Each structure stands twice: as structure tokens, then as C-alpha cells.
Amino acid sequence: MAPPASNSMLPSVDWRTAASCSRAFIRGGPRMSPEGALDVVTDLRRHADHAIELVADYTGLTPTVQARVEVVDRVRWSHINITGLRRLLSGLGADEDRDVSNAAAKVTGVQAGAVLAFLSSRVLGQFETFSTDTGRLLFVAPNIVEVERRLRLPTREFRLWIAVHEATHLMQFTAVPWMRDYFHGLIGTFFAATESEESSASQLGRAVRRALSAARGDEPDSSTDVMDAVTSAEQREAIGRIQALMTLLEGHAESVMDGVGADHIEHVALLRRRFDRRRAHPGALQRFLRQLLGLDAKLRQYAAGRRFVDHVVAERGPAGFNRIWEGPEHLPSEAEIERPEDWVARVLSDADATVRHGL
Image (tube, rainbow, N blue to C red; front, side):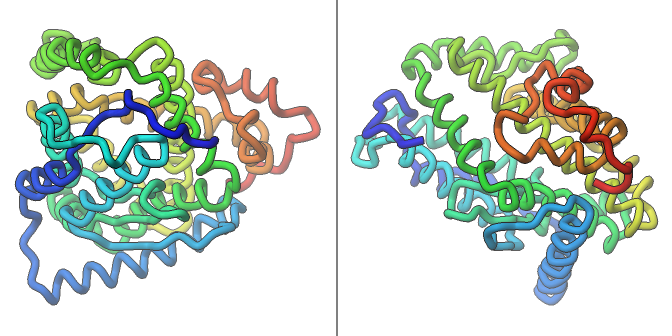
């Protein structure tokens, strides 16, 4: 998709403010000696290499490009994502010469920095697709150490398990030739339908109030988040396609990490049980921020996507499931995620039935 020459409706962001606020808001990680930190970095790199091999064997996918693998701290993770977001918006037609010294751009920079600071202490790993031409696989070392200590998890097994999840995302974007451009095209469609900043800002207060109510438990069934409140109908249609894709990718990664774990990680059931408990029981502040940022929707993606993948593999085996990577037309819709038998009927034929083993 060729980007427009410029798009004045794209958000105006003071990226220097975003970077400085992110650094200021990021809290310190767990205490480690320099030697201990180096050991963690070395260990995570080793697990990443092993995980990529295991995922390739398990899924039958082979990377067509070489993506970089980095073990980072929270500040570095935030910096990479700021670089990626800036590159994304520039590629979609944002005018780099626009005046970002105005108050609105600085406010947006503060908001972006605050969000990234919060996420920087939560993200364990990420395949980041925007900042380089090939994408890069990131592991946030202090967060992985913090979680394994808090949940009292077997270190080697937990690190390999998380590495398998993220290596699956790497495989999805490097072994499926059309995936990265397709994903970026969806993002471009979303921004092409952006309404004015004034229209979005007028709804932000209501989103915050609803998020606070949900966090207190006043609206336990509320699924409203910032994205619901500040998007147009055209954007919500684009979001639906993005969510369907991300639900598939997350569910696939969940299925693969447990499938690989069954063969290579002795205590995978313990890891899954304790890790799911962590996801399901956030504190009050975390409930508010998850509601505000739409992170609860991401947790639902894990479950719905996992059910879809497991159903298709059980019905048609790994070869049948892998038909999904042949082209965007084979991707499931949101409705098909909920009813995988409809996807099977649309995409697969009886000839696709195969021996059921692996993925």
C-alpha cells in the first residue's frame, strides 16, 4: 500500500517529549548485580535461539528474512517502540516538518510517554514490526526476572516458554511473506479514517470515567476503552480486521508455546496455571489502566484465538491449519474466530484432512 503524500489528520506527537516522559515515568526493575544481569542477557539469547528452532520444527514454518533478536531493559524497549511509532506515522504520510511545539503535540507526547512507561514494566517480549525493515524480536529482561521471582517459577523453563511464544510471532511475520505488509496496510487503513483531534479529544473524558467505573467494579461487563470512545465507524471496521488478525496470531502463539512445552518443558502445566492466574488478577490501578488502554481485550484474544487454533488442528490437523498462511483471503473473520467450523467450511475441503500430529 503506497502511503499518502501527507495526512494532516494523523496525530501530532512531540516525540522528544514522549521519550523524556517515558524515561521519567519508568520505574526501576528488580535488583541484580552487573554479573547477574549479564548472565540473564546471555541466557535469554540462548533460549531465543533454541526457541526459534523448536517453533520452526513444530509449526513447519521457515523464515524468509533474518530478524534481529535483542534483550533489552525497560528504557530501551520504550525507545525502540517510540522509534517504530514515529517511523510508522511518517510512512503513513505524517509530515515530519509539522510544528510539534504546540500544546496539543506536547500533551500527546506526554500521553504516549506515560502509556509506554506503564507497558514497559508489563511486556515480557514482543516482535516489533515497525522500527526496522525486517522487524526485531525483543525480550525485556527485568520484567521476565521480576515475574519468575514473584511467581516462583523454574527459571530455565519459564524463559524458554516465553521465548517460544515470542518466537512464534517472529515466525508469523518472517515466514509468511505477505504478513508484515498486510498488517501495516491494516494500520494504514485505520489512520486513513482518522477524524479530527478535536473530535477524538471530546470523547476522551468519557472513556476515562467509564474505565474508572469498570476498575471499581461498577461496570463489570463494560468493554469500553479509549479505542472504542475515540474512533469513527470506519476506524472501528478497520479495528475489527486488526483484532481478528491479532486474535489469530496470539492464539496461535499460545497454542504453540504449550504444544512445544509438552515435549520440552517438564513443568509447563505449572507455568500455564500460575501465569494465567497473574493475568486474571490485576490490582486496582492495573485494572483501570488495562480498561483504559484496551488490554482486557488482548486477554480475551488469547482465549478466543487459542480455541480457534485448537479446533482447526483437531478437525483438520496441522497441514489443514497451515492453509491459513497461504494468503490474506484465508484469514478468519471475527465471526469465524468464534465459529471455527465456518472457517473450515469456507477455506478447507475434505481433501485437506490429514494426520493429526504437531502444528
